[in-house]
Length: 111
Image 1 (spheres, rainbow, N blue to C red):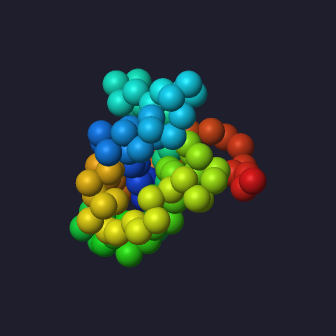
Image 2: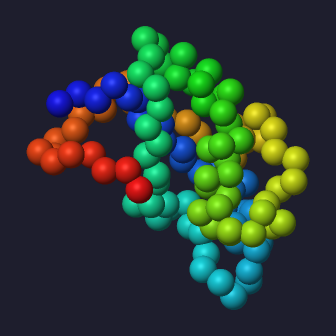
């Protein structure tokens, strides 16, 4: 069953890894080479073109940025204080998938 959503995946770049690894010298390390196993898939609106979805991401970049920052540190005081759309694109590649298919024969649950 096709869902009326798009899939939005952020792929961290070196600036995100540098930020995460600078928080705690003795803590876990963020490795770009291993991060593909831990990517979050965000469901966005169904739109006609990939460009429209990219504009949606640009409009809501801070939501996506904060989701990734919180994934590494739940303390907003450790987050970069002035996040911009340009910084977001320096820290993440955005991958869009316009077709999302549900392959499970069970109701969707929202947590």
